[in-house]
Length: 317
Image (cartoon, rainbow, N blue to C red; front, top):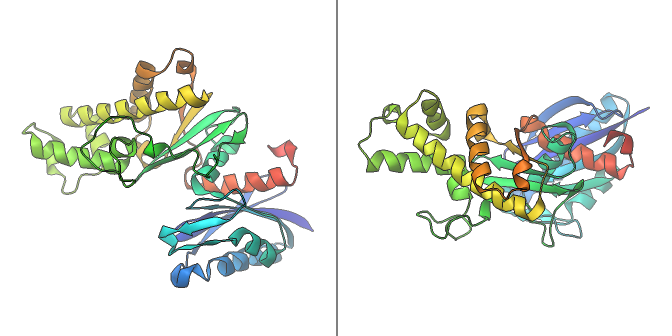
C-alpha cells in the first residue's frame, strides 16, 4: 500500500487540501467548505473525513498532515483562538492526529506558504529567504539557514506591522501608525489612489473607475498614466524601504513576493528592486527579489514539507 502526505491550508471560507505521493509530488488537490459555525466544532471532523476518504479511495496510508492555519501557534503546538474562525483554537493538532492516526504538524498559514515557496517555489535553491505576501494586508515569513523563524511568541515574520514611517495618515489594524501594511498592501494602494483623486485635479484614467482597486492603479500605470505611475512609485518606495530594514536583520539570499498585488508582474518587481537598492545596506543589496511561483497552492506545499521533514525524508527537502 502506498503512502500519502497531506498539505492542508485552512482559510476562513474554504479548506484547501493537497495529496502528495512518496516522491513529494502533488497528485491531487481539492477544496471543502470551512464550517466555522458553533466555534468551529465541525472543522476537524470535515478535514479528517476528507483526508481519510482520499486515502481509502487510493488505497493509501496517511503518512501525515501538515496544516497551515490563520492564527498563532504556541511553542506547545496549540492554536490561539482565531478571530476569523469564530474563536476556534486549542490543541487542534493533537485532536486531528488522533482522528487520522498519523503525525500532524500545525503552523501559521503565512509560514506554511513561506516553506512552500522555499521548497518548490520562488525560493528553491536558497537557504535564507523572506517571503512577503501583498494582499489585503502584508504578511510573510522568514527562513534563516533553512529554519523557519517563528519567534518566541509565534509571530516572527509579521512584516506588515513593522513601522517604516514615524507618522501616517491612517491607523493600522494594530492601532499604530506608519506600519508597512498601510503603505504596501492592496488595500493601502487603493486608499491612497482614492485620496489622491479627491485631493487633486490631475487628469487620470482612474477617474473613470467606480471603485478603484490596486489592480486598476497598476493597469493604469502600465499605460503611462502619470498619477497612477506616481502612486505605484510611492508604493514601491515604501515596500523597498521595508525590505531593506528586514535585510539588515536576517540578511536573506532572496525576497520572494507573493499575493494578489504581484499579478502586476515585472512592472511591480522592477520598481521594488529599484527602491530596495536605494535603501539597502551595501552587502544586503545583493539579495535577489523574485516573484512567488506557487500561488494559492503554497500553503499546501508548506504543510507537506513539514511532514516530510518530520518523517526524515531529507532526500525530498
